[in-house]
Length: 84
Image (tube, rainbow, N blue to C red; front, side, top):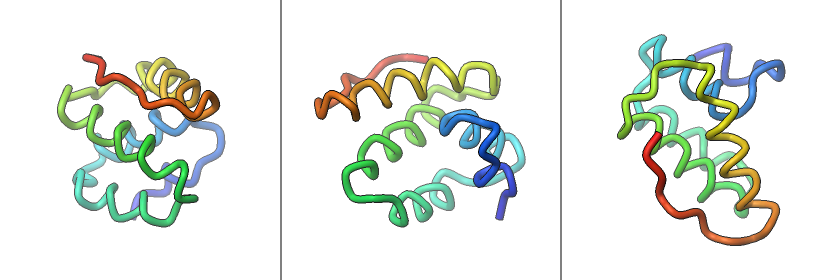
């Protein structure tokens, strides 16, 4: 689909943004979320939704988005929806 999705040199949100910029749809990215561990699925789905809903196209924004959701995942708490 999009080689950047498996490129470990990019953080999670940056991968999502790069693939969005290459034409991958939100629906296509959501199908990949189902392959993640159950605990991570909600956070990954939120990242995908945020990138598309807020029209994030700058891969440089990925670090802030990933850091935010990874922090929530590590604490085991829900993340409040932010505007990126």
